[in-house]
Length: 238
Image (cartoon, rainbow, N blue to C red):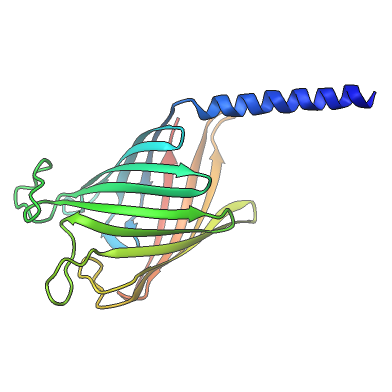
């Protein structure tokens, strides 16, 4: 009898392992859009009510994601289009992002202008690790319209943050602390500066048995700029 039970357990485990391995080899598609009351990025105010779509594909830890932001209430708000190539394995992640903004060094705001001294693109590399109970990430600009140091040289502007997820009251929470390690006018920092202290709560609202809308609220404080924000948003996805 023990042999039979053991055989059944091994069979179930092998089927589960095979299914998991098969799932890892499938191409995954991300299609979603956020609507936010205010566009806050790393503690900085980049706009009012905004629409922020995401389109991405992933395969075996490798992903390519397009993300954008367009203001809904103010014509002067930041327009942004980002492309990120990333790779994740066993909690370790690395990636490169091409940011494009509708304001920068090019007065005509051309997307395909990549001249180092006349572009609206910013190129950033990132590396991080997710420990499960917490994650840490480091970001550094390495090309494009980067900030400058006090002496006018390229700053290779950097930012790092630590995030801790947790559950409370049936809601998913995340606490984040982020800082700029050295001087750069890209983040309006003349040295080490804490720019982002955030607390975010996310909960799914059931519309029907098969359709839910994640809503989120976030409180963000920027000690560097002496500003604080309360943001509300929701996510639309298939």
